[in-house]
Amino acid sequence: MRYFPIDNKMFIENRKRFVELLPKNSVAVFYSNDQQPRNGDQYFNFRQQSDFFYLTGIDQEKSILVLAPDMKTNMLRETLFIIKTNEKIAIWEGHKYTMAEARETSGIENIYWIDDFTLILREIMSITNDVFLNRNEYSKFFPEVEDRNQRLGNELKKEFPLHKYHRSAPLLTRLRLVKSNYEINLIQQACNITNKAFKRVLSTTYPGCYEFDIEAEISHEFIINRANGHGYSPIIASGKNSCVLHYVENDNECKNGDLLLFDFGAEYANYSADMSRTIPVNSKFTTRQKDCYNAVLKVLKKAILLYVPGNTINIINEKVNLMMENEMIKLGLFSLEDIKKQDPNSPIYKKYFMHGTAHFLGLDVHDVGDKEEPFKPGMILTCEPGIYIPEENIGIRLENDILVTEGEPINLMVDIPIEVDEIELLMSGK
Image (cartoon, rainbow, N blue to C red; front, side, top):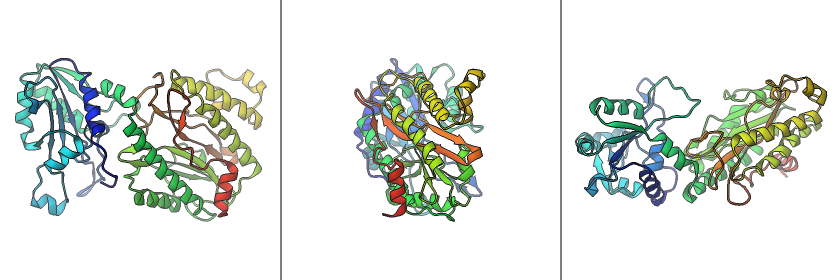
């Protein structure tokens, strides 16, 4: 793996907290991610299923975790199944975990080859009554292709139809929402790498370069700093593209006088950062660009102070929407009189700020958790106000990753340049 070894205590503690939530005489089965077909005889680069990584630290395909904490035999309470490698696999695909390596990585003592899975599972199922299966339950995600947990989980139901089946996702959501110190450190590392990449592009952006030139600089910095790569498809949006929220083509020329909106984050050890910044292509904001930029920055600074225990994403959104509305009035986008006449179901500010301010962050860039979840110490969320004025080719989004604590929120991106003067100075090369 590119990233440095992770203390297996992290995964041991994650499993311990998970099994404490299981009812008596139950078993939980987790499958690693699929190798995703690309085309021909090619696969996309493998990325582990987030819950599986959270519980094992194993970054390899065709692996299975079985947790049955009430088994009388210690060898069956916690078992991990991995690929049995051979000379052909070693030659064509490279190294796979040895049993000793899997044991050291995961902290699981009982490692078996995957060929032994069926026999061992049958023994466990003959004693247990309740089975917990896992699947991705992200509410806004509707994939057409079933993942490995879903497919193989359905096969288990057919083979053992008289057991009671339950969902692991709600239990894992409770656990993954609050990050351990191990996880906070990994996300901070992802933020630090993202910082390096942003500083790199500040010195390599100029009128006439292309958005993909900048993407290449970011990817280069990620790789040489041991990141897995991008935590999500990077947005490098210049000029009118800065007003397209999920612009990912990154193929246009960056022109003199235009703004350039970034939204990217490094993924380190499968944990993602998520940052947005906006800069002037020619290193100097116009007066209008600067006014719009500082309006968003002002809201960002105020919004970060709201990331305290007890608040929710919905509360953040409501308060930030009002802040942005006030700033838009100052920028002359509409008046108080216009607000009085607006349709309350379609407020005017949504024309210029149409997305939410916060989402949870962790193993997934849009991590587990809903908008009504009260904040607790250890949660990490994004803070990302923005303003988009297509008729002026102005799109500005500023985003930092925020750790909720017992006291004041901690900005994990506090070292990433964000002030107008700082950005202009760094871009000028002085």
